[in-house]
Image (cartoon, rainbow, N blue to C red; front, side, top):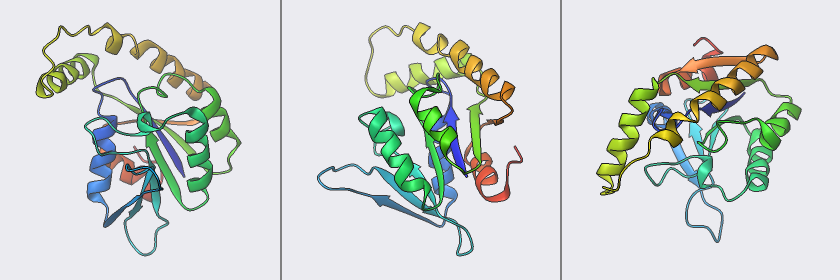
Length: 186
């Protein structure tokens, strides 16, 4: 199974993946020389389950595939890890479009779930504002960038739904655990 998570800034994408990793029995970062940050994490939930590979680094407050240098590198990682187990990834930049990554995913035989965070936009804005303050960033916050992502994310969700793809709303790591290891039940 391949699960791609979508959502605007502050919607909880990275938090959901971290919660998913916290629920697991084992999390092993996968480092590739000469890079210092992991390119993925191998997640184990039990002996009878295939592992799940979470793409990107989660060493900073904001993680996921936004830490990967290029679309080509992301496609390479998807190709490498999809053959070894389940695949889970998220990122702000890839939340608003299907593009080359989506077309590549469409070509793979695994079941796919397009998961969308269901966090209200005002809560997203408040979270981003607080995250900036926690980091010591006191410059004025222009929330338009966060709010303006909602419409293209919804348009993508509508497009994927119209195609008949599996599209779900989620709010956390337990939802991801359910999707990957119990089938889509969210």
